[in-house]
Image (tube, rainbow, N blue to C red; front, side, top):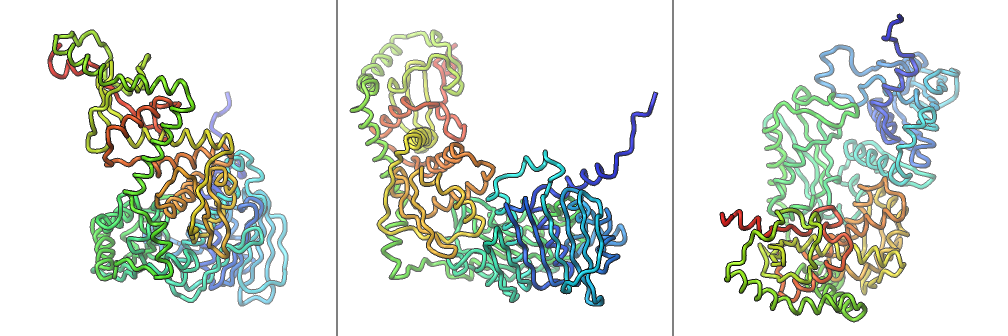
Length: 613
């Protein structure tokens, strides 16, 4: 009987190693660019085609490599960054994982052109699937030029899981943006399909670099952070509370110039802004924390983005205090340019007006349903008898009706087999101006007003989108958006889906876009914020490339933003309108996010709670 334990072939070992380090084109870009930075390059040009799937090229003017060094760099675990085990605990360079080039070479067609300053001729190396095919002298400038073609061509399963071109290039752009922030003295140029996406100045100014990434709107609202406490130093920029985003993805943290992802640092930022912005909004930040490398372990994740801190409490305090001090010293008063004042007044409406408009649309839609549908008319007729039925129920209760006759236990209402019509419910009031409390023939019902209205609007949007008849509302003054390059890529790819939902978007030059029309259901909401949030949502859901799924995703965002809010007081008529519309809605027992809209306490359950049975 032969042994079951076998040594894996070299090509399989290399592919496994590649899977740990190289997950997508952005991983390749990160490894190559970090190596260029470690090689003391002052100028970097990154080119990509088809989101990096077909081609990635990184050209630098760094130190370059001699022939023997270039050949050795293709070996696994070969590196110039560490020599002893203890070096792993005080890493100061970026590309210390020696298998990066070997991993890339194992799953692509790789070409390296490089020359050191001491050599007259450069070296060309060609590699395919990890096998060195050619080595020869060439003429090339000092530095390194690496070309990666047909990524994952020999691992089709890995290739299949790559996302859309727009998503992949947005991931690459995100990596380059953060490296440009970490190294403002280096000029970064990113080109995708012959179109320039970024060119940072490379003049050692973080402010100018942020301008090249985020544009004028954000850069003019930045606050400088400069704070020291014992052995730690915090530098960077944060936005004033008026500039926020729907997610924390625009928060960049750097430890000794290495970009990292840190829940601890995000929480410190949130705590510092706690009383200044809504809890579901996030400022844009670029913060550099300098400390002794011995206090941070960056070798805990294959992509080197997650870290462990040895003094978490002290680091949290420094980041929080540094931001609080910067905010306290800044002028946070709102300034309105007289030329823009009319636009601000028309676009930046109060939440109260938005809620009034939302309720008005709800009532109008209910009224329309009454006129156009015999079925809805019957529901309304039943609704008019509610108070009589409620009075009758109350009278019977006084006579001692046995509550044990009703056998339903507390559960999400959607799980009850034969649900009564919501039009039979009698709204009793609101709990915390968030939940409708209603009496029905089978007990007590609690309705989440925001989730219920979300479901109604979501269904209306999809129904109208299917009929290509979403009603748009033209804006008297177009909304101006200044977008980052990744946002532009996603916007361009999904422009048709946006149009089908009622958005009219027009390029205005550079990174600026105009929103000329929005879905009517948005009413008087702060549409500039919503439009940006929708684009961010598309970035988060970049794997969706079917129009139908994009429409559902957008409809979910719009319905959430335009629905009645938690904490909003409703009149009795508004509660009744909400129940009538929810009754007619498909999938009425959950909102588009999957949360329940209604929960039910049966008469039996209530009787048990009050020890009546």
